[in-house]
Image (cartoon, rainbow, N blue to C red; front, top):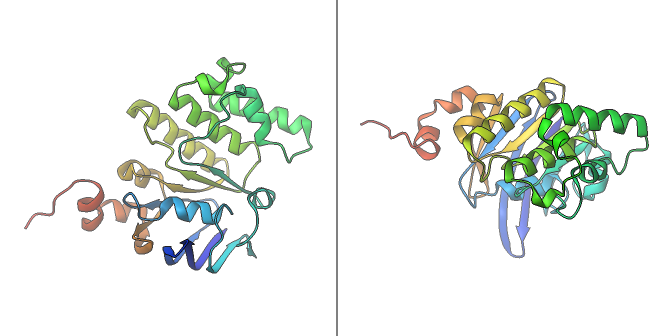
Length: 238
């Protein structure tokens, strides 16, 4: 579904992505892991059209999309849940959900999807008239995911969905991500909770200093000595 080839992205004169290549097959969950500053969020912003790569290609469903604006990429079936959630605080839960479907015209379908989001995230049904800015971090993260799903994406990008959340909330978020995938949505997820994300992912890539240094089956990565030492705090025995 998504193919990235030799993508380089710059911030001014700083080369943040140094020719990365990766693939996200349709129907799978693919994880992108790495330390702070590795280039994970830059990768997501580049895919989502918030940054334009200086070189390389990005293909979505066989169509080159590098250089398209974010709203155009939504039309192509891509949605991003950004780092830090970024819900619209002065608007209600319902208004945030409706905004996620702003490019759709099928009012009956939109209403059906709102009801589906309420069933997936029951707390949103309880808080439907509440201002999003007054909700807890976990509730806002659920709203951010639900809002993105309202565009009916084929590919969902999740940037650090567990950041700053309590462990029980994180477990709920990851269960929902699996459910979203089981319903047919392909997922690319950036996540520092390496153990948790590799348990639900099918495939993973490790990013260091703007370069892919390792990739493989998620279960294999979970037991890889380098991954265990660098990201899981497991020291290799001599």
